Image 1 (tube, helix red, strand yellow):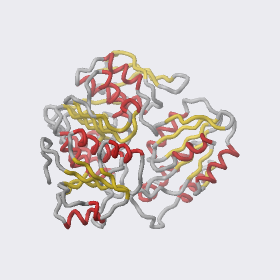
Image 2 (tube, one colour):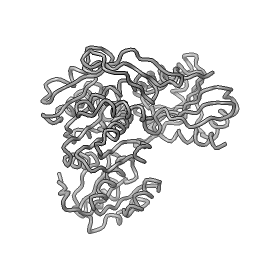
Image 3 (tube, one colour):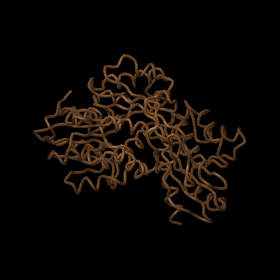
Image 4 (cartoon, helix red, strand yellow):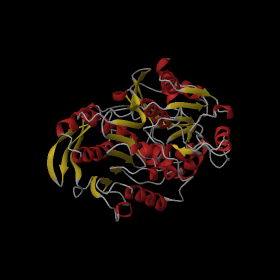
Length: 460
């Protein structure tokens, strides 16, 4: 694999530079005086920002975008050998590395790198740590898979030895990371277009945990089913968090305020330490916060900064994000949940809010996930009063006709829930405007572009 000498900036081209992670890495390299070019299929605020910073952005992927002076090409898992720029780089014998390999190399430049992994909760936990690190004046460099208001985007370039990032398990990309501190929030069945099943996923997380620096720390959910698989025979120290008070970090007396924000008593090694108040929603975020607290305490961040950071953190955009109200006090929330476990956590958080009826507009994400977890999706969504299912968001996949949005809607309706399939966003918006009633709660949900429905409704 090509190794970058960060003391000698070169010309790096990004295929798919407009992605949330790719753009962040490009921005870090721009600060290090690298010449950055890139391409993407559509312009966006992200590509516009990179252009203003000095990157040369091409809209549309073409072989001619790979110039002869390109020293290195970076690409994502969504780019395959039939991509014209990938093929051009190979023809010119230009070295190529993946996004994950680049991120792993960047991490080596920092003494205290923290990688947040887990099937669910990575972005929110990274947001919590970001706020804590900022409150603790650690001046971190941050790369996160969402927009955090505190850093004005998805990237922050600091001037210290602290680096904070998410670590995604898809295609085993996080095996390229060797963090000083690793976090494993949970292990669940997902990305079944790549993994054969939950056992292979658990083993993948074990390999990630093994890559933790021997002088560092693994922070692992002590309650999860696959804890023994993930935590066995690690070279580093392990601390645990979770609901059980036998964990190193746990929570007692969890309660919710009138807005649905949780508070709890923090326990360390079973002893009450202090009260914690969060500014995000749902019991699941109590446990995300415990993981963040564990990391901060191990890095000697003061409890004052920890508590202040958690109070300030409203999560990342698209994580139970309040969008506004429509009609007669109908509250619109948007959430990124695209896995049954995440859906259940989001809908559980919604129960702590005061509303009349609960509406959910759900956009399934990828055909393989929808097909593999169809019954689980139906079970998670049936608790709503009304469910509208859109077409499946294909992302990196193609429609093989194996499953459709209507299949999911029919499954939910079989439970007796008012559920139906509407492929048109315009039709969905019109239906909502005609049928939502006073004090209803409307959640747009999914990892695709379903959030545009709420944005459009707010404007009407």
